[in-house]
Amino acid sequence: MSLVDRALVRMLPAVPRPVVKRFSDRYIAGATLEDACRVVDDLNARGRMATIDVLGEEITTLEEAQAFEDEYVRVFDTIRDRGLDANVSVKPTGLGLKLDRRACKQHLAAIVGCAGRHSSFVRIDMEDASTTSDTLAVYRELRAEGLDRVGVVLQARLRRTLDDVADLAPLRPSVRLCKGIYLEPPDIAFTEFDEIRLAFVRALEALLEAGAYVAVATHDDWLVERALELIEARGLGPEAYEFQMLLGVRESMGDDLVRAGHRLRIYVPYGRRWYEYSMRRLQENPKIATYIALDTVGRLIPSGAKQVPA
Image (cartoon, rainbow, N blue to C red):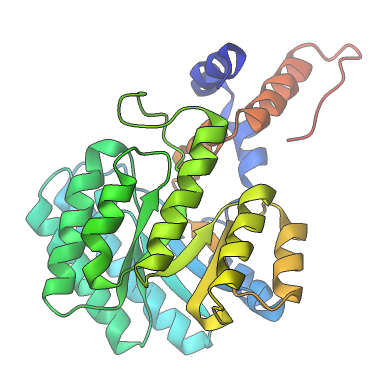
């Protein structure tokens, strides 16, 4: 990330919330579960699956964690009742990981149990590096208890990821592989664009070699091409992997993947805590942050200043 990009990331908290809201409307289904269902209905009609995420990991009490568990049960009931092709993604800190790991595991076990009753699936999201070890430990504990309708996320940019793949290999896990959005220090993470790409390919190769079901989560053309090469080289059928993308991002790429017969799942977040999620997306993509900054300047200096749409 360049010095300019770093400066933009630091200034993001000063961006007016209405400007962030305009940006976020592309990436968030809305504030309610009904909003998410309308989006998933449309995605399903266009040959895409979905994973529904309830926004709001910034909790401070275990009562809030219980509320998230209750909401995910409601999501599963709604997926069943409406016949949606969707599962769920869950952030462990939203279930109390940083407050009480045992309580977090209990909440996750309840949600995964609900997924089993609905013949569905739970993806445990990966957050910043301070949560990686605990998140993977909770995943292993759930699997040891016979809860199999659950998978995890690994971030290619973390230097530990190949070791994590080796540790998880005996479980033949379901893994979403992504680059990772969190700006971690260089002693624990790759920081250069090309080395993150290469780390992604190495992790994907290791996961496929281990017999994992891999959800290839990227909007990077080069990585999609490498993934397709690895999939073809192993003779994998469409049921053995999937691609994943964020709502509102690279939709033409998604069209190409679906037309070619690949399974594509779209990440569909909803909830009142749209602002925190939007800020993470902006930090992930400094180019979008540039557009937001220019738009803000254009609002402050309206005399003929050209605005760049986010």
